[in-house]
Length: 193
Image (cartoon, rainbow, N blue to C red; front, side, top):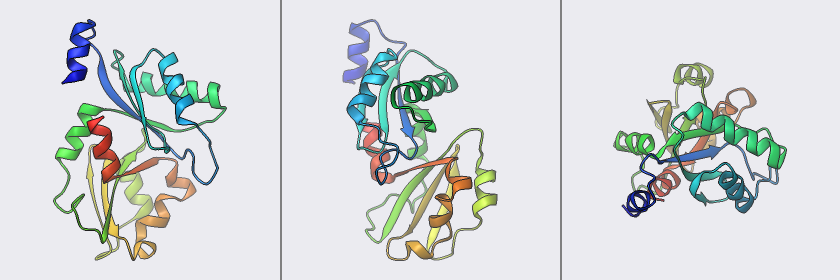
């Protein structure tokens, strides 16, 4: 509500909230992208209300630009110019992300501490069918998946994660570049920012 009131006061009703999810940054010392510098890069693109969350490349911002492809291209070019990295970026509106969360299966994202819940974002032009045909069936009793709007709800046993079919395969070189993954808690916090 506060963002809406600010936009009304400053004549920015066309502004829309988005999140950019960068794939594979700041992992084991690779693809180093300081979040403070990334935030400045987004602000130089004339995005407003820029916030970062965690060190894993989650950026929430407002823009009057309505095209996801154009936003994605602008962000990727800025990262390439500013950090000399070719990083895949998944951009989604907060509104679309809220819809995804509203359609989560009952078994995903609950308080069961023995289960780890992730949301897999599929990078265009890849589709769920591409991901599924490459990874295959989830292992019964160890993991569950359900597709919704180019995302996959994925839950698995914390203690047996290495026995799952999807754990190692989502990180494989071939399919891994087509995905970016966030935990249920991370996604929920991003939506509220």
